[in-house]
Image (tube, rainbow, N blue to C red; front, side, top):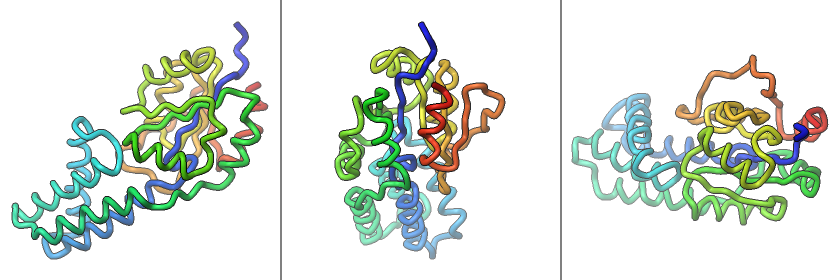
Length: 233
């Protein structure tokens, strides 16, 4: 089978629309709430530890983040966190779940240029309801031939999804901002991978850039994707 490109997978959060900035703003609010109980760096560090522990239980997304904030507040205050602070944390989580979607530059134009010429698949992880909400509000849903909301992204994930919605990883390209979730596992199964860095990246999504990989490309923004797709063929 020829190795020309037929399928393009897109990450959603911080690739097509803003996401991490709302987590950072909420974390700042959380740290301020607990300011009398510790230094900002200590509180943020405890929160990150809780998030990492809780991924196996709550998965990725705002609900798990909110529960991790509550857990951290209990830990930091040694069980003495005031009910009003718990209420503030819950309110902050609800605000995140209703925040308007802000698409990133070139997202709509790029999808419009590629739709119909390639199979476009949205591959995103996180809370099902929240990801569906953001996709609906973004106005980008009609560009996609398929939408997959997964619990995590691994090499097996991409192998399965590119076989289900395309002609296998060898004829697929994955586009995303996370080296750990979008790029490295896609390359591992033989797909092309285009890294579109975002100025904010969650600490648990960091990974070494696979600069020596033949199918790895790095773009300044989504505006360069159409030319890259032409180059790949």
